Image 1 (cartoon, rainbow, N blue to C red):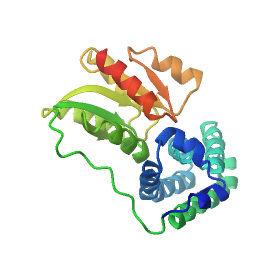
Image 2: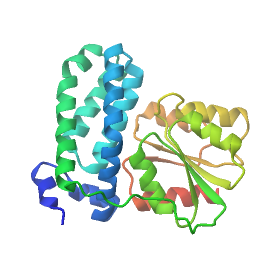
Image 3: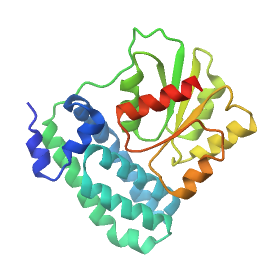
Length: 256
């Protein structure tokens, strides 16, 4: 039996996380997802910091912030948010001077997660092999936490297609023949090809009528929201969201 008091005693806001996940089993599975992806995320942050690539640093630290918020890692989320804002402002000096502090808190949460899980892996959320539904939802987000969270919610009723950036999403859309994509959930801030590039492609190729799109984003700035709604999207939901939030958006998107 995992000791949730260990998390609480170390400042993890488990209560807020359960408002999103609903149950500890889902929280534990998401914590596994975090551990599976965080080391790659940290290596990318180090690389972008060292070469001074602040735009991509901002995207990566934004993803770390979102993961931390979902899991109740309050201090890590706050530190990551400061780095996101400073890197967006091209403040390389701040990033360089405060990078070790961010990494120390990230490693603290990693060690805590490992200790809490005790080497015990929660079951992976896999595709329901009995699902013969030919309708699919395309989830475009670079966070494996978001991917798996949405997958768990809808896997019994839809095929779930996953893309980690805009180019992967476009490749899926261009080549998809085995099922009908009835809705796309699209993140805006992603490495390589971002969400706005996908929206531009949809506009240029008149795809919004055949494939309705809703936005899932951690960027609630007025500038980004206003820009997104210049496209004929169905709706927008800001992270962190819970199961009821995302079900409502999917229903609205599909019926659109």
